[in-house]
Length: 263
Ligand SMILES: Nc1ccc(F)c(C(=O)c2c[nH]c3ncc(Cl)cc23)c1F
Ligand SMILES: [Fe+3]
Image (cartoon, rainbow, N blue to C red; front, side, top):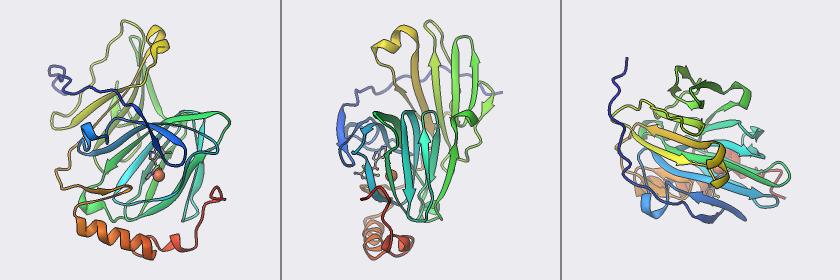
């Protein structure tokens, strides 16, 4: 049984103010803003809000994973290998970009689409692996309730239930909903970095408080980031930019590809 230690002290708190991202989209970036550039192994945590025709048109990724958890509406994704789909409210997409993905992520329903996108770094030994997806529909996400607390286990384990997601960088991602007066003690490995993203607005304080809590095992490696490219050295970033421009070393399919949404 895991030893239950004292609750971890909160060492940093800040308000994630809205900023522009993509084409006409807005994100509230907590991890990845200047006050918290890198929280090993986490690069970015965005709460995004986007309505058509805005969105995140064709763009690349290399060297890390993007975890998209929809809260409202839907996003249609298409990549240069022909993989596409729609992530609806409650659904999860865990995308391991590895050596290279080029994709688009665009609104797929009327009104405002909202969700979380977490960028998790990959260790040097996995940065150039073949891309892969792990996708869960809302109904397939493990859920448990106890004493006024409901948890949806995106990755890792809570209240005795586990997620089927394989986390190459050991990670826990939990969606808690707490009724007023309830509390939760979540075991987190001592060496891991952990954060809580409180997703509530004032109206939610009255009925329930929604928190998204995560934790991950630090990689302890150098990080050199150039937008959606995250490697371990400037030389590797220079090579990545060259690969993307020349459609090589994992970006070959980018040569002939445009998303259907990129009209
Ligand atoms: N400029 C720029 C550069 C690189 C990117 F990867 C992106 C990008 O696609 C996103 C950044 N936050 C996000 N939150 C949610 C979703 Cl669905 C997409 C994004 C982007 F906008
Ligand atoms: Fe993307």
